[in-house]
Amino acid sequence: MSSGSSPFSRLDTVPVTGSTQDDLRGVLTGPEAGSWPHLSALRALRQTAGRGRSGRTWVTPDEGALLVSVVLRPLVPAEHLAWLPLLAGLAVRDALTSFVDDLPWQLGTKWPNDVVAVPEDPAVVAAVPGWAGTRKIAGVLSELVTAEPSGGCAHGRLAPDEVPAGRDEAPMVILGVGVNIGQEAEDLPVAWAGSLRTLGAVGAGDAAAREDVMEAVLAATGHHLVRLIGQWEEVGGDVDAGDGALGRRLRAALTTLGRRVSVQAPDGELSGLAVDVTPALVLRNQDGDAEVRAGDVTFVRVGT
Image (cartoon, rainbow, N blue to C red; front, top):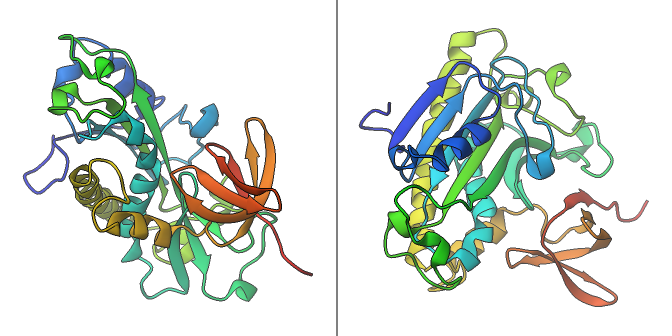
């Protein structure tokens, strides 16, 4: 369970499981849903069946990554829930920034749900097609629990633009977070992946020090998540409402914006200049602007 200084209302840790996402979905659709309130979390030291977007396998070596799923019941209209992956990515980016302050890397987010490290000098980092020198450090996965919890809560009957009156009425979302901490380059599943270890932020071979980093990242992620969700709720889920500060922060962190990209979307490939998020990605090309709501983004090399 969590301590008084923890940002989480409940924090359980298990040594190994298939998927923390699946474990929490099972609980939240059963009679024990009420025991997992807003900002409760389940952490696994190892997962055997972790997954990312579109059911992709999330592979990590033993004790190499921070793996946690958080239950959220945000007081925002359902029509604004699509902002959550970008908000969560920003929370993780903010949590990791202090670890790379003195290193030649800048952290940002990548639409739709990645946290990435961008080298200050691209020439000293091996370029990967579609990613250049950018390295994926973390990913988030946001999943709505559509089944009504025990007790007959009314969140499923709220209008899309209606703000829940309380947490019991709010939609239940499971937010999965995976952060690469101690993996060596050869442990990572793809060429464009990185870790705090490969960035130079974590030393090799000291398991106790690595666990301290994981605990610090977990706590910082939770605190930043609490802060950003609070700001999101204050503007009614519309990140551009009020003075628009939250929307500006989200866009400023996005390494995707201002770049020519290609998006492998469910209905085909689209390309263009990434000009905005709504939270869909807005691409501009010779045919005008188009919104892409899901897909894998790669960067398009300009020139020779």
